[in-house]
Image (cartoon, rainbow, N blue to C red; front, side, top):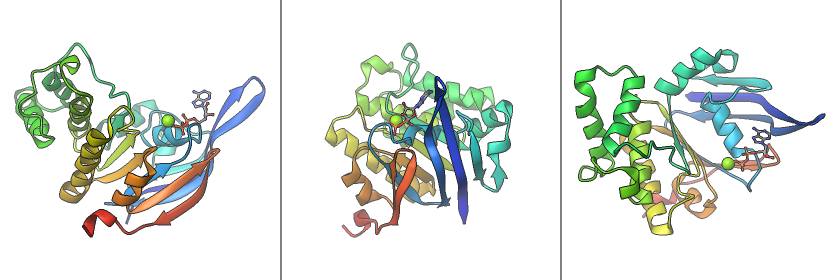
Length: 235
Ligand code: ADP
Ligand code: MG
């Protein structure tokens, strides 16, 4: 069953009089529980596509149907709700509040999600424990490694129990060993919690190991959409 159905999606930007389509007539669906990786060189439209799905940006044309709801018709407020409750976003640059410790960063997401005050801390601690950070909760981002910060970001993305995780180059700032650990954490969220994952990455080799499907973008268009056997399950 599809959680996401995208049809004829276009996002154009104007440079002077010339329109450039960062996303140029893209159509695909994602089933619940799939891991789909989106790869393509820099500037191919990966982030634009993810931001449209996450409701951070609005399309020029086409449709996005999320869980049966046509979110491409929604206004800013409705999209804010979509972002808060239905998608978890993770970025290459972490997007942490650097003056607050790990616990506060996760608590803040729970505040936005309307979690009752007396439950926030316990829930944030549970989330941080689930990503392996039980010992590091009171550290600020500048006292954590890149991999640890990304784990905080993942815990934060899970705060309001989204069905789908949108990860934009989540390992782009990490060394290869740490990158593998973060990829494994994403896979475990899929296997253990059934989260649907849309992963934008430069690391095609790893993506092919962990994904159910690969979508290749070039100049805002899908040039290939192929199902693959998850090799990691055979090992
Ligand atoms: P990727 O994530 O694959 O590197 P992006 O989605 O960031 O690619 O960008 C795709 C294209 O759209 C690029 O040519 C980029 O310059 C352009 N673009 C992205 N965002 C904007 C914007 N806000 N204004 C103008 N052009 C943009
Ligand atoms: Mg990008």
